[in-house]
Image 1 (cartoon, one colour):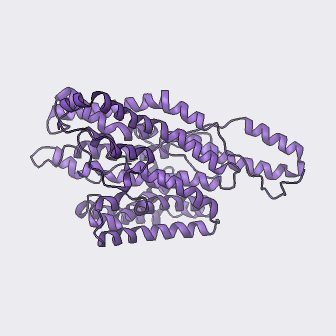
Image 2 (spheres, rainbow, N blue to C red; image 1 turned 135 degrees about the horizontal axis):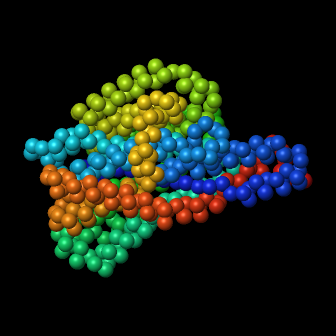
Image 3 (cartoon, rainbow, N blue to C red; image 1 turned 180 degrees about the vertical axis):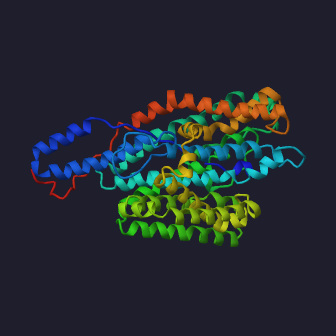
Length: 455
C-alpha cells in the first residue's frame, strides 16, 4: 500500500562540557606559542558543539558559524512541519482511498504528497549533520565522537522498538492475531531482524497486519544510517574545494540513476528507497551547508529577497504539478526528477527560514506547536502508525478510519497520544541518553599550524 511506503527523520541534542577548556588551558600554558591557534580551534569546536545543543528532536542547528547557546526555533519548526506532513498523510491514507462523499476524500487529496515530509527531513539531515562534519573535519576525535553521538541518539529507542515487537510476537502472537483487524499471521524472522542492521531498504518486504504499521515506514531510517556511514568519510577525505563539486555530482547523478533503473524495470519501491537513489536530497542539504559557512554567500543571500521568493514561487509551481499529476512517491514523474525538484524546494525554504528571520517562512516555522512537535519528531515518526492502529482497535474494534465522527475523534486522540508518548520518551529516556553521548566531545586537532612534536 502507498501509505506503508512513505515517511522519514531524527533528533539529536547535546551539551558543552568544561573539561575541554581545562585541557586546552594546560596545553597553552605548556606551549605559549600555540595559544592563539589553539584558542581559534577551540572556538570552532565550541561553535560545532553549541549548534548540536540547539537541536532538540531531529537534527543539530548550524546557524551562522559562531558559538550559539540558544535553540534555533525555525529549525524546530521545520522539523515539526515535516513530521506533521508525514503523520497527516499516514493517518488519512491508512484507511485506503475513500470515494464516497464527505470531508475525508478532500483531505486525502490535499494531503496526498504529505509523504514528501521525508524529503524535508533528508534535506535537514544533510544540512545539519553535514554541517557538523564540515566544522569538525580536522578534529582529532572526528570519527569516534560523531559515531558515538549518533549511536546514543538513534540506536536505543530504535532497537527498543524492534525488540518490543519481537517479544510481543514471541509471547502473545496468537492473541494479537486473534484481536487484530486483519487476522493475518504476524511477520517474524529475517524481515524483522534486517532492521537491526538498517538493511530494510535493500529488499522488498511484504509486511502484513501489525508489522506493516510497526516497520513499513522505517526504510527512511536505513537511508539516513547509510548516509551517516558514507558522509563522514566524504567530508574528511575531500578538500574544501572538491567537496561541493562532489556533492553537485551526486545531485546530478541520483535522478539519472533512478531513470536508468526504471528503464530496466526495477522495482519502483526500491527505486524510491535505495540510498543512492535518494542521495540527491541529502547531498543538496550538505551542499547548502557548505555555502552557508561562507560569509560572503550569506551576505549575498540576504540581499536577494525578491529573487529568492521568485524562485520559491517557480519551485512551488513545480510541486503543484507533481501534486496534480504525479502525487504518489512511486509515480514516474516523481521518481525521475520529482525527488530532486522537492529537494531544491525544501533547501530554499530552509535558506529563507534562516536568512530572512522576519520573513513569512521563518514566521511560520516559529509557530509554537510546530516547534514543540519538532522537538520530539524522531519518536513521533517511529510510533505514530502503531498508536493509531492500537487506538482504533481498542476504542472502535475496527481499522483506522476518519469517515465518521467517531473515527475522526479516535484519530485525533491517536495524534495527541503519540505526542504525549514521544514527549515522555524524550524527557525520561532519549534525552538522558543523548546527554550521555555528548559527554564525548570533538577534540581540537593536534595539527594547528605547528609541529605537534614540539615541546
